[in-house]
Length: 115
Image 1: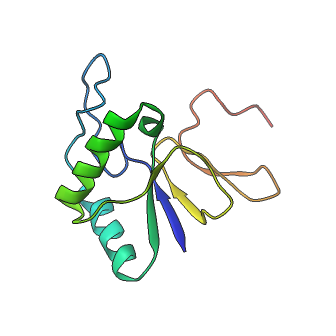
Image 2: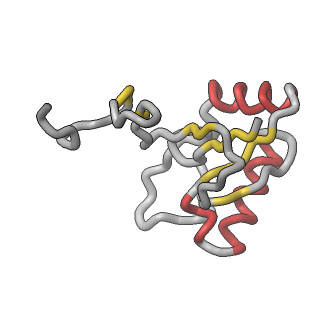
């Protein structure tokens, strides 16, 4: 299984630095870090799925360093949704039931139409 995990706010705590500094990555969210290590031990592929991937080589360097420090290995990094990814974990996502449009969960404040 290929599992994509968002970095900021999901695997690492979001830092409130302004402007956004691509070299500053928060400490791990322990529950997600534990999950990622478990998935890797089970033989799954885990990918860091983050907008930071589009910020150039320097940004990826710091993500890889963060992964080595907290996970013990580098993980692939992308911001592209591909057909081989089986599941996504993201703090900003809203889950939708497949083929129905029915919302299953997530933050929807002022986004849901009246039905």
